[in-house]
Amino acid sequence: MSQWFSTARFGMFVHWGHSAQQGLELSWPLVGGVFSLPFCSKIPVEQYHATAPQFNPQHYDPAAWAALAQQLGMQYVVLTAKHHDGFALFHTQESTFSIQHTPYEQDVVRQFVEAMRAAGLRVGLYFSLIDWHHPDYPAFTEADKPYRFGEYRHPTPEQWERFTQFMFAQVQELLTNYGPIDVLWFDGGWERTPEQWRVQELHALIRSLQPELLINDRLPGFGDFATPEQFIPPQPLEGDWETCMTINESWGHNTQDTQFKSPRQLIHTLCEVAGKGGNLLLNVSPMGDGALPPALLERLMTIADWMQGNQESIVGTSPGLASWQFYGPSTRRGQRLYLHLLMKPYDTITVRGLPIKQVQSVQVLATGKALEYSTRCAIVDSLLNPDPLGELTIQVPEAVLDPYVTVLAVDMG
Ligand code: GLC
Image 1 (cartoon, rainbow, N blue to C red):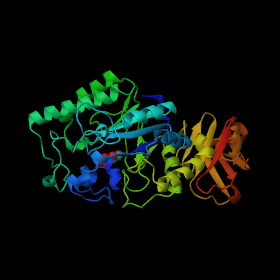
Image 2 (cartoon, rainbow, N blue to C red; image 1 turned 180 degrees about the vertical axis):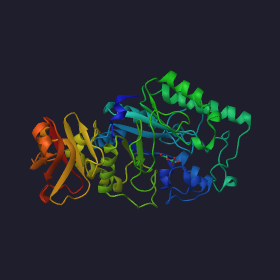
Image 3 (tube, helix red, strand yellow; image 1 turned 90 degrees about the horizontal axis):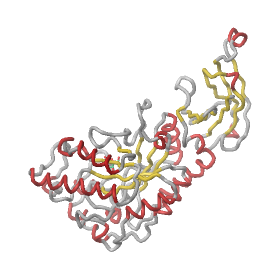
């Protein structure tokens, strides 16, 4: 498993397609919505696809996204190269349903990969196995509504043969035309069986082209990391994992959805994920012209401000204490422990089961302000044990509290 991913902690997901021009959730409106997306509209299939040939995102500026990701302390960025609606944001020899056949013409994926690489960010591509537009998939039609999980129109064997060849060829294009790709983020596996997707062969193809690349767990039967969606696992998961989450309740740019999470909620989520040893892949939804909506930018800038003083407690850290030791998430790096105060303390906070004689200092991470503390342990231990475990109680005056999350750094020697 790649080292970088295991402690990356923060990444940007970009859900984008031509339907952003209509201010619609990505893909799902065409099948009539889905229970998990409360603000997803239902529109005729034809109306959904109608904006594909007009796509012309004149304000698409992946270098600006890269700069934003860097300001946020993000380590990687994942773009929907192709979502369930089948529209490719890359140049493909396999079909005309792509960005190449729009007024924009340029290869959005290439521009994206180049900009992210230039900024030193890791690059991921999302690729939907489902293709609701390809005739051999077969394409989703009005007659297939309402969308029902488990009940899909099935192709003939000849159609499926053609479709899998097409799909394999597109994966091959993504993994040969853009240099090294760090993550291939599959989705949509639920509509067919692993045998139908030919997962073994697909996996072998990917590994032969890019042996270092990481694959998420949505290629059925495979996966270098787990992908909890829209929630934080109650217990840290075994192995690497990544929570993907939206800032409102939609993946694509959806003007119907104004249910935005607050910057504080988002920062708390990031701390909780880091404390459990996972990564947060936070989603952004560019508009049809390629710019990011002000409501997202505003929130991201607040997170960036917070990260400026506190990134050290998130990126590159390992999980800190056990949950019985402290009321909140914590992380560590070497001899430094970071406590994330997600609740406002009453005068003091206490950490239990620490080697108290090793405590050198406690400070507010963002300001460097030293805090007073005291320690205690069992009397016998304090006399006879050179390295006893005990309690560390830290004075936390109101005046040092951060409006989002206060992080304390405890240095052990
Ligand atoms: C779901 C949705 C999709 C979204 C993805 C992100 O599977 O189908 O719209 O891209 O989750 O995790």
